Image (cartoon, rainbow, N blue to C red):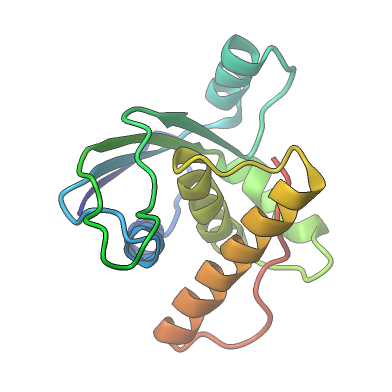
Length: 165
């Protein structure tokens, strides 16, 4: 799996954890091991510009996903996953910090960025949360991936609550 993490935010973030949880999520979703993903960490100003340009919404947001090859997880266990360029995930640590502090289970900026990375991966794979059934499926999968990764890392304590973006 080729995953690039590029921190352009000026904020120190745990790039290794972002890389690791992205790799875990893609493996868990059975995405081809030669697929490519880019994760870009930007400041609030850059995120606000992207949010306005692509969503026509004001202010910065927490995560944005820009799919490329529209890869999807294989439907059956014996199907061969397709290979390709997944796309870009853009994260904003300033928004992540605020969300982590305001969450019912308060958590760190880095924990929120890990959750948002999984959220972004799922969006790249075609998951959405516009409708209640879609939201239940996506957020359930998101929680399972984050919990699985945290358990594999030996991390204790409650996982971050699901993020709505």
